Amino acid sequence: MAGDAGFGVVPIEVARTLDGLDLFKGLLEGRYPAPPITKALGFSLIEVEAGRVVFGYTPVFDHYNPLGSVHGGIAATLLDSVMGCCIHTMLKAGSGYTTVEIKVNYVRAMSDRTGPVRAEGKVINIGSRIATSEGRLTDASGKLLAHGTTTCLIFPI
Figure 1: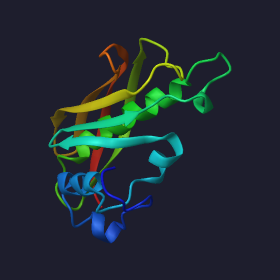
Figure 2 (figure 1 turned 90 degrees about the vertical axis):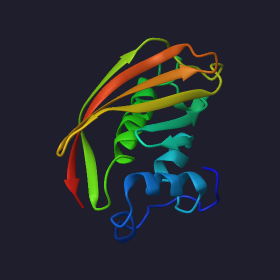
Figure 3 (figure 1 turned 120 degrees about the horizontal axis):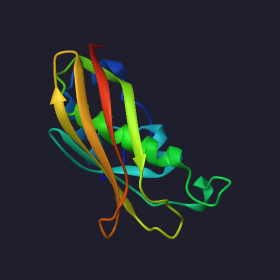
Figure 4 (figure 1 turned 45 degrees about the vertical axis):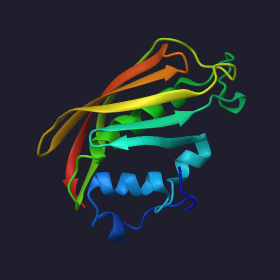
């Protein structure tokens, strides 16, 4: 995150007064604290616009599985996050969402030698109750590591 609001949770009383794009711009600018999961897994919001979100992450040894590569759950979490957050940028104040379904395809393994990666989510469709989006996880040279789609339920908060 660009600012220095630290890690925490935006109080629901504040979050429900902001449309999704304003919330994510505030996260990027450091006016609101970064969610704790970003600290735990070491990823950060690096770009945001209506219907599009990008997170950065550098794979680390601490995220290895028993087979000697970064656990696939890290890629799935990054994709779930960007695919949901890009939907969130399109929501009106007082609206929330939750993932109903996620599909992830793994193309290449990540290791602590992969270097920085980008997870980019883009909205496919926003309806009144259901939204869909897609995500791509790429390395610094643009090689595809994983991709996915999601369906999210939209509801009032």
